[in-house]
Amino acid sequence: MIELAGLTKRYGEKVAVDDLTFSVRPGIVTGFLGPNGAGKSTTMRMILGLDHPTAGDVRVDGVHYRRLKDPLTRIGALLDAKAVHGGRSAYHHLLCLAQSNGVPERRVAEVLDTVGLTAVARKKAKGFSLGMGQRLGIAAALLGDPRILMFDEPVNGLDPEGIHWIRNLMKSLAAQGRTVFVSSHLMSEMALTADHLVVIGQGRLLADTSMADFIRQNARSYVRIRSPQRERLLDVLHEDGITVVEAGAGALEVEGDKAGRIGELAARYGIVLHELSPRQASLEEAFMQLTAQAVEYHAHTGPDPAPQAWGAGWKGAE
Ligand SMILES: Nc1ncnc2c1ncn2[C@@H]1O[C@H](COP(=O)(O)OP(=O)(O)OP(=O)(O)O)[C@@H](O)[C@H]1O
Image 1 (cartoon, helix red, strand yellow):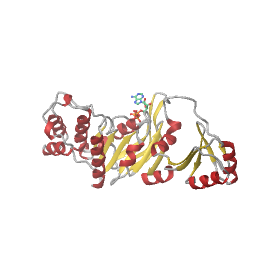
Image 2 (cartoon, protein in one colour):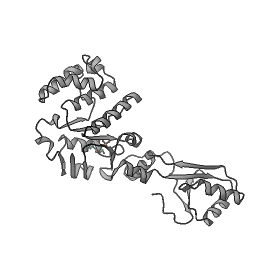
Image 3 (cartoon, rainbow, N blue to C red):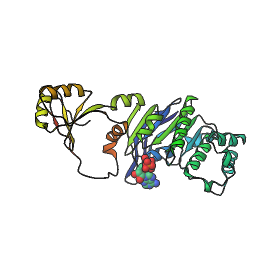
Image 4 (cartoon, helix red, strand yellow):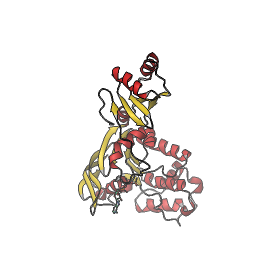
């Protein structure tokens, strides 16, 4: 279990982590999501005692990291896969870690086998690909057989096979009852891996929810419509109590699964439709919406189309 209470980190004027309170529980994969610069790495560094909180507190199994005896056997972390002495072999790198942390030597061969690096164990780490480096970093995290694991963007730069492998590894570690805390800026990746989600933006907590609830609340379905008789169509839909939203580029959107009803109304009133497509918003979109106000650097590719609405009960883009 990892417990954060009011955890805050300032760098001068910059608040990197802002009053975070949440717990990471055992037996499940908890995804830690946020756009670039949201404060994920800073939070993880504070969990490991590498950065001091400006305020608040973070505990690993009830104690501060620095007070843990043999910390590698309690919590294993992959923060920066490049933090390896390149002149050492994978085996030697892990052996040094094991010897300086009271971990039995046999664990080195075991974790090399787990991450699939046995064949290259005697090769120098500086010749490793990004994927091999990630695997070596994960091997180091697993070395002390800890009950808590923390991975910062572990799939960065990996090929599909590597991504698949990491996904399964995390699930199996959680299934063994371990606490697994993994950061990502990709919702689509987390949707396939995490049971629980903690979302932050500009250091602040935006969501702390089960993946199932997040999907239930955010995987909205809607219908996209295009018509050369747009005004007439708007009138007809309005009369039928259907709420319509401007979707930009001449398209309209209606919440829910109403394609059938809209098609019938269009047919009854002889309105030409160029498009009538039922759609499902992706979780990536839901995540972008949730964090939209909290992104540090926006790439402006054009004017933001301000949503307009017609009809009953439109409450704005939520
Ligand atoms: N040592 C530091 N000094 C000053 N500012 C810092 C320092 N470390 C991080 N920051 C700032 O704190 C904020 C949070 O950074 P952090 O690296 O924790 O975010 P992140 O969510 O991990 O982002 P990314 O996904 O890009 O890795 C950023 O604005 C960053 O510029």
